[in-house]
Amino acid sequence: MIQELAGMLFVDGVWRRGEGAQIPVENPATGEVLGHVASATGPEIDAAVSAARKAFGSWSRLAPVERSKALHRLGEAVAAHADAMARTMTLEQGKPLNEARGEVLKLAEACHFYAEEAVRIHGEIVPNTTTDIDSLVVREPIGVVGAITPWNYPAELIGWKLCGALAAGCTIVIKPAELTPFTALAIARMAEEAGIPAGVVNVVTGPGSKVGQALVEHSGVDKIAFTGSSAVGLRIQQSCPTIKRLSLELGGNCPLIVTASADIDAAVKGAARRSFRNMGQICIAINRIYVQHTVADDFTARLGRAADQLVIGNGIDLPDADVGAMASAEPLAKTQDHLADALSKGARLVAGGGAPQGEVFARGHFFRPTVVADCTHAMKVMTEETFGPLVGVMAYDGLDEAIELANDTPYGLASYLYARDMDEVRHVSTRLDYGNVAVNNVDAGIMNAPYGGRKQSGVGYEHGREGMLEYMNFKHVRIRYGEPKAR
Ligand code: NDP
Image (cartoon, rainbow, N blue to C red; front, side, top):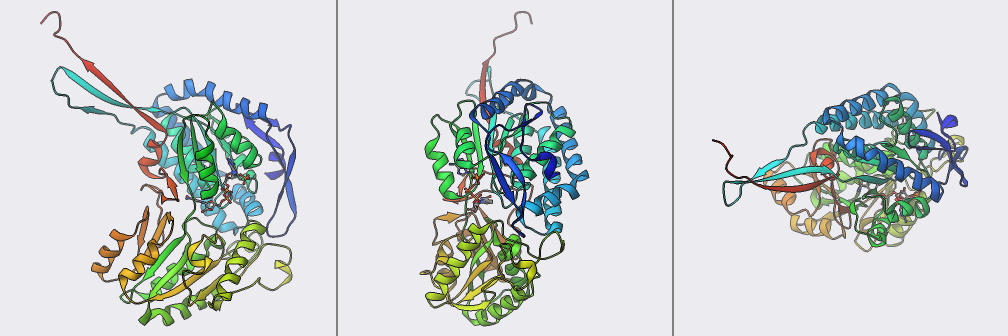
């Protein structure tokens, strides 16, 4: 798949060889160059936006049931090519093949979910002060969407934007991360196979500072749907030259609270899964854990053992490994920096702490899942997003102290609690200042509930019906009726 997509852009339903500089894409597990992608030029970006604008007229006026059928066909195409798409993703991103396949199938699920939502775009009739007037509240698609996505979930994070936008009647220009462009181009191939009309879906590749920024500044783009770091999200917000709709799904620094009433086995399993899945490169990864002091030693020792037991591998050769390579040298360096900072300030290493040994790991970006205990808020591991396989543990005495520590962050994406005492569950879940709170489980986001952050974690929602409404304007049509001429 990579060979046929290399160097190509998908604009107005046509594959065209990009005329800009060619950027190498590496396999993070081996360091090999997989292929090159084009850095889209100004005229190519203009062509993609014009194509999306042209297609918007007919796509937005298509009967919702037809958009729904198109999205179902897209879901079917994605599922039919799940193996090839997963292989592409593992090669460029590093996650194990089975996990990549699961992500591709979740993209298919998003297509079917929003296919169903497309036919449920309701309006409202709002009461007025007199009965001869109807106020209709009508929902209309915003227009052309520029979607800018990161590398950690190369299929799903495009899917939520693509499917919500298309269901609403918008058209889209996608700019994927430079590290993982081939999955995005593969999605365009699926859109083509599903018979989605030319111009409705376009993909342009290249560096964010150039190609992404060009979409942000483009007068033909009505909305930017962005997932990525808070720093780039803020830059996008500040650099829009005209008023645009924005949804920004940004960074996190997600806490887990474990009380003495918790099922410790379940808490350990949940913590190991949500701290280390995808090598911790998840915006909703558990970064820091607060454990009631009477159970802290037991919990920490068990979490250390669980981390040590995770199987690390090259995701192609070991499809069912628990974790694969990190996506690039950058998050690995940040993980090492946060670990060194914690250890220099008195943290205790409980598990991991370095690269795994062996020839298979020699050239890739590998790191062992790492747990540090006796942490404080003077350490970066507790206060900054690591975006790597490192988690800090700190003991607490009173529950309100734990809540205060958990909320002591500029971020507000996801938070977690393990407790069996229902009074604790209510007290903590109502006080956590986060868009998502998962209690006695670690799946903070599901397809049919809104998912979004607060504070520096962003604005807007993906998933659920709200994820489609992000692509719609409300129009108020106020109609005064007279008496019919003949009665
Ligand atoms: P970045 O913010 O660096 O990049 C995200 C995307 O933005 C990439 O496509 C990038 O392009 C592009 N970009 C970079 N600079 C600009 C710019 N000036 N204008 C427009 N686009 C630009 O994030 P990462 O890719 O490093 O992803 C990791 C971050 O994403 C983490 O902080 C994580 O928490 C967050 N994230 C949030 C999620 C959420 O739902 N809230 C989910 C997943 C991740 P390129 O890389 O090609 O240069």
